[in-house]
Image 1 (tube, chains in turn brown, red):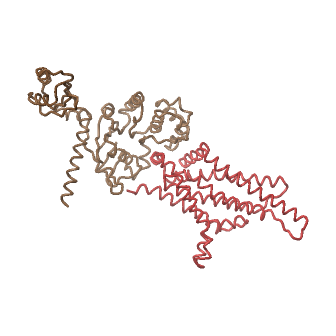
Image 2 (cartoon, one colour):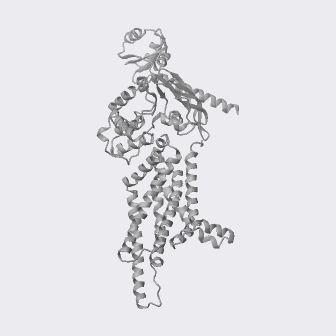
Length: 322
Length: 255
């Protein structure tokens, strides 16, 4: 459905996206993950035909997003970040306008609007000005305008940002309900969201793709090593010395000042009992002993920091070359 | 075509759901009405004097009322019309709706013409409402002078030219105040270009005179229909709309 082929986008000399390549199959839900300013929005804008890439190409349903922009835009429902809407319009008029510019004829328009109003639960605000409705409803109007005309592809830029937990839950369910039916690209910097909704994740940082995989595969990649958090009442230095001797401990993090340590352990070792008895033997109180599961956060932080360290070394080398 | 229509309807409606159209129209009509009133009062004073000394005064409705009225209205237009065009693109850029608008399956030219004709529509309603003056003239038994038709055509063409320049400036900024101030300034300079025509030498002077917005309007307000003037305004409109289209498309090439 979507083929992104080595696209780069420069704003003047500043690269926003560098050499990004990925594919999305029909009916797939792809999560686009990265810190703010990583290039998520830029990539989405290229896909929606808002501006072309500086180099490389992207095709949607076999059509180049730039050469066949108009046809491609007919296939896409797009929800930009921050949901820009015409605040001086009434919700119903706005949706009718969208239906009209998406090329639905008069008889289909009414039906299409009625459908999205129902799906997005907009009945209570249908006759109100957009400027007067709450953030949650605005988000839903944004989603509704993307859904009008039943596009094959939904591109949603941070669809749950700024909503309350109940609304987030609703929107996620709505997105998930299209699984298999529509192709969806969804950007976010909230990790649990992608692992909940998406079948595949593209992690992007500083304009580059750093990983493409399913959430499960990405998690198992890191589960090779394990970490444990341990909190005790003992004096920090003594605790460090004592615990370092326990079998299976690779390294000990610094105390956080309240007696809590993060301990890196040999993979697949059950060393909690040994740690516990070491603490008890020394006569200290043991408050916490928790294994830290490798989450998407870890993978994310790992990939993102690795990347920037590499970039730093590269730039230092550049400097020394001169 | 249906896309143009959709954009046009939306833009036209928004003028009236926001206070812009009302503010611009009310101020325009109040000032135009004031000019009409002073013109008519002066005319009645002259007619009174003429009735006593028929050999001295030659009183003429089009010279004393309509011609100055058209001139005055055109000045008010110069001040008011940038307020109609300033929001057209600048507001969309500021609020970000620009992004959605240009990712709908719309051609740039459909968006541009939809917006342009919406502003032109509001302007037409505004100028159309001054038609009340003609009804007043008819009511008091005066026939409507022929110059009026040419004058209205001139007003409409000049207003359309103002709007074309205004929409270009609006497409170039995201700040509405900047859009309105810059379009007003540019229009004023183009308007008064003929002032310098006597100082820059005969050749250049002629060019300046031809380019001046007001020079071409003077013929219309005197009831003169010259195809050169018609061509001037149509070219002016086409030129600025064309430039606006290029500005809209330039986003695809920049960066």
